[in-house]
Length: 378
Ligand code: SF4
Image (tube, rainbow, N blue to C red; front, side, top):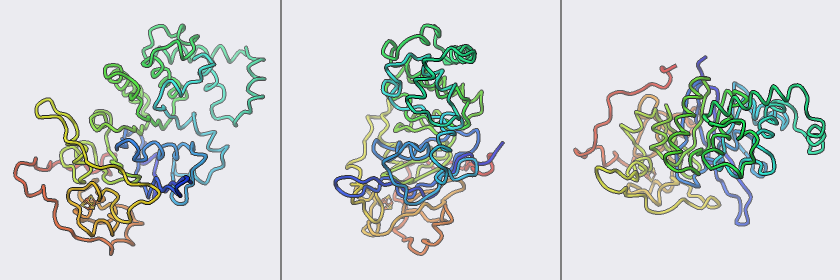
């Protein structure tokens, strides 16, 4: 089945802080198609995790003053808490960043897995109801859940699944705990899986194994995956489409091959230049830091770090424009039709600050002639 499973439109998220209101997410738009793996990439603190927690409904202290999160055609922001709870963990699943803090330390892996199977899609339980069920547990279905959980632990290549099933999280290594989290996330065979930097807490070898495994499992089940990472190298390996995020905004989005062959936004180019290469040198990095979310600039949020900034950049907001088919950029160096219909109204505020300086340089790689049309891929 083709078409989008998830559409995030003009999403705004803000928090009350002691310094005032922090506008952490500022009009984020992106789409994830069915069966697709897309990545949300950006440096730590740019709002990736806040965006996905807003999608999952896991931000009780945040405000969402504007925007829509359309999952399978319905705006989940208009659903009640119990309706969202029923979808979470069943149709929509998430692998959290830290495998130690995401597992309950006082329950065995098996107890946590059985809870997922037993309560997925059901109304939220109070602690008393949960305890009452625990005391009276031993129902015939628990044996069936146990078998399914142990089978899933085997699927994520845990060599002694029964032992791990009976273990407490503290008895397992970081890599093993991460596999347990993947197993839990896949138990309900979700249609949408959000993987929030699942390899961050792991060493490089274990991370590579976990990513391969995740890739195989979601391909088998045709799951749509939104992959969160600060590492463009990982995004290139795992995703079909990349959304680059900076300071709570999507600044560039393109199919993965297109983004790497023809990066346009100065921030994306900075991220790519930051990747250390064996053949050349250690990466250059990007000078400066993220803006203060309680007092963000009116124009481009990247202006204070951008080597190509012009005075106008700090005054006029650069809306996403489609510069090539399926490739959109939010930067005044690029012109094109507004990438989202709500931006049509703002077309008159676009400004021309000239062509990107690197386009005339002969030593830059020429953009690929192969432009992937996201719409035609389906
Ligand atoms: Fe740089 Fe201006 Fe483009 Fe922002 S809009 S990335 S400041 S050139």
